Every structure is written in C-alpha cells, then in structure tokens.
Image (cartoon, rainbow, N blue to C red; front, side, top):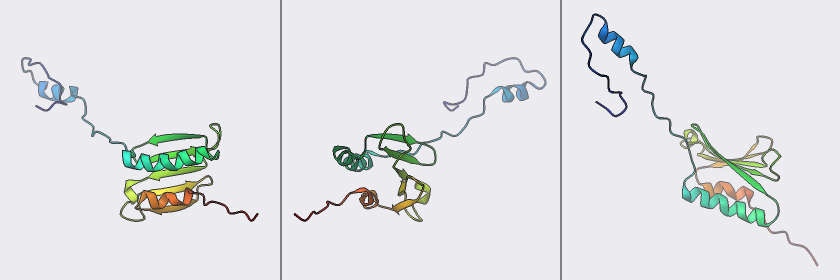
Length: 131
C-alpha cells in the first residue's frame, strides 16, 4: 500500500462490497508544484530592487508564486499598480526564454534565458550634466 491510500478495515464480504469500498476511497490528485524564484535569482532581483529603493524610485514589492509562473512585482507606492513585473515562466524556457520584464501597460520590455541580462533593462544609466 502507498502512503496516500487510506487504511480500510476488513469487513465480511457481501455482494457489491468491493464496489462500495472502491467508491469510498478518495481520489488521489497529483501534487501541484508551484513555480518559484530560487536563491540566486532572488539575489539578482533584490540587488536591483535595493539600488532603486536607495535612489528613491521604488518603494514596495510583491512576490506571487503560482502553478504557471512566478512574478516579482515592483511598486512606486503600495496602493498603485505595479511599475514592472519580473516573470519566470518555465513553459517559455525553450522558446523565447523563461524570464521577462513587463511594463505597467503590459508591454514586454525584455525577454530571455539569462535573468541578469533581462534585468539590465531596469538599470538606470548615470546621467551626465555639463557644468
């Protein structure tokens, strides 16, 4: 017996008892795994997030783990819609890349296989001023 099957006490057999016992067992469902960011990915994301928080551009974030994809959302204020969403979708890993950065309007800014390369779109270049 496997660990997921309940233990059914033995009873005297009667006609139709086997069918009754079979219908009393709960259906065993597949375990659903959720997609998540690993430690290396979170270190890269939080490094860029921390730099933008220190610059005063971003203030809040949210992480959503689902069955289809994991999303790291960046907010200017907690009550607004996210400025950017960093998505990890393993279904697209063989095609366009598992990682993407999505802007506020839903436009995909960058997509690829390497998270560090994809997140370069969020790094602000220093501005030079003539004195």
